[in-house]
Image (cartoon, rainbow, N blue to C red; front, side):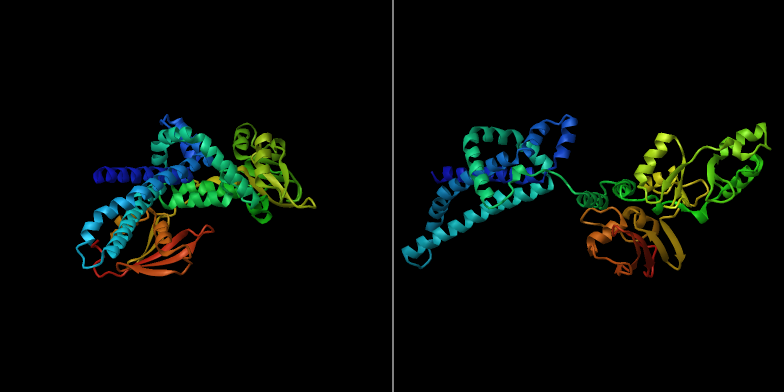
Length: 437
């Protein structure tokens, strides 16, 4: 009989673990991930997604299941364990009453310990780490349990909602699963530091969120930086000037930069030069777009696309020219600098001599230690970049100038960006035999 009761206790602890795992997995899992799995044809993904959209019902089912199994464990567990422990405690030189009391106390402690560790803590921890696996595994059994107990669960939810509203509590089922812009950026940052997305993908996301807030005056080439051609120039003269500056589109002025009458393109003038090199530039101008310096760049991008232009002239409130912006300037706000053939690529590691280096924070740990023949840097948190390693292991309050030594290598933070990601390190290898890893 005792063996049978022990089997029942073990079974109830196992069932408790399932309900606890289901509860935490439903709260932790993202509907977007389940939708992706559903589109990939993963079984139970649609059912799991349905459950996340009806959290009140299925969390209540989990709570009901946990309560029922806990009651059963409490009902038979204490007496069963007490019966097992009583003969052992009787060997102690104590009274029968004290022996009974101790057996009950020890039985309660043992049952509680096993239930909390095996039935709650372990499944909770696993569900937080692998919510998708758990929710897919328990979806069908939990649905069956919910259907069997639906009337009682509905009654529980109605009662809880009514009491909650009396105290002004916003119930779970009424909340929307949304993330703010700041939360989305933090998710992207964490994903980058864990190696789930690369540097370019993270920067795309960050720039896209900034895109809507930026104005033309923040990205334009100002008046002094503008290269222009006079309307009275010949095609050959204009081509020579354009080639010398390296730009392919020039505003055309009538006397001064405050009187821009259009713009010309190098490709068009080159074609015309074969026919008539002495022709005047003013014969080939295209009408420009004029925009205010406070215009949002997203609006300007739309205007450029609709009107099929490549540059826009930026003016102030009085109509004076303050600069120009090109479609390349706008695109770079999302994709970053567009590197021309003549631009030098920035190296990830730059030697300063005498085992001193400048290191880009975006470099992957494996590449970094391999190239400099340094001891391996293993990050238990899963970060794959040098910047992510330091942010994870030394805290998010790292500032420029922060310095530390690891295995004889001194790291100093030289530059950080606006997202508190380390861009540049100074690395000094002080080991006596730096070729040994």
